[in-house]
Image (tube, rainbow, N blue to C red; front, side, top):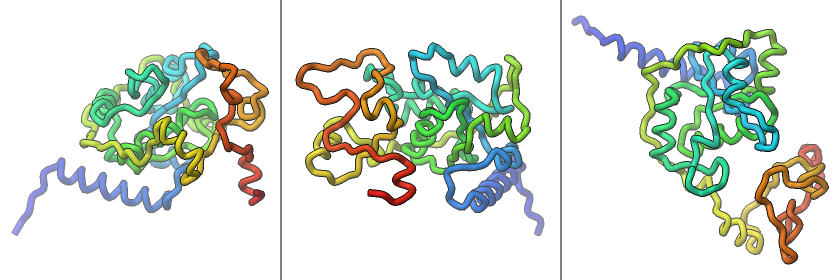
Length: 246
């Protein structure tokens, strides 16, 4: 008996097999190297999630147009967000997130690698956002685009770019509320200490309140705590944590 398979079915099998092989290759790591990304470019999606502080007056989307990893898509954490809160890059609804991925043509059936043009929050926020919606086959390019350039791989510097795959698959997603804590939750945790609260800002400057808050709209009343600290927070650097100090 002869069995015939439709070409789309065969393509689906091949994609799943390739994805399983890539998962085994990274072995649960969140960070991937520039060499790994280059070797697997045909099987993965590459996303530029660069973000700049407002006072820097830089346009990450425009910068992407003239300096990007070939074939990469730009993901704006301030646009794929809840736009009704008045706060930057708040987690959107599941419906809006899915619609945004469809508009950007990001195929989440393939591994997705995020990178940034700076060592700032954009790539980490995008990586976390995808995981918050149950998309876990996501990674971060270690060292960002500068590591890519240092490795000698090509950079697309043309303003005209190829459109992403029009057949990108975006299944229904659910927002995992266990990934989110409200302001009220954080306030209660100061007393209960049930969860560890980590301040990821640099220890020199903003954490120890020696530098002003760079974003507009921060106010301090006579009764407020230091603008850079939450009650009960102690400073501990990444280097101290790595060395096991307490």
